[in-house]
Length: 134
Image 1 (spheres, helix red, strand yellow):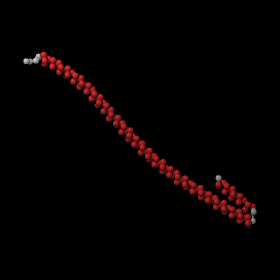
Image 2 (cartoon, helix red, strand yellow):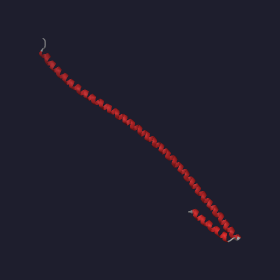
Image 3 (tube, one colour):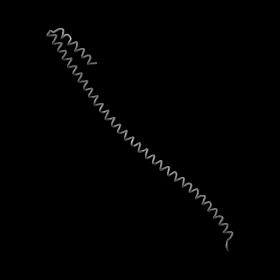
Image 4 (cartoon, helix red, strand yellow):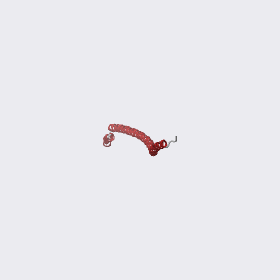
């Protein structure tokens, strides 16, 4: 927007110089043109500074995005490692659970065997008492 205003001012200042070539008017018009050219240069310099600032900010955002991407990759790798550990733990728990079930069955069989032995010993005791040698 500022550039359009400067161009209009420049055209306004130069226009009379072409139609009136009086030395006084020409100098005033020339001075206005020089001022407008200087203002235009300053405006372009301001635009250039803004573009450079935006460029540096864009580079900073890009660097930050790359760092964030690297961090995300590290988090992903850590999560995959956690999943692997959890899977291994689950497999080991399944093995432990199966072993516990087998031990429970064995204890049950031992209990039945102990009860049977207890019954046999009671029967043996009765038999021994019945056939006791004196």
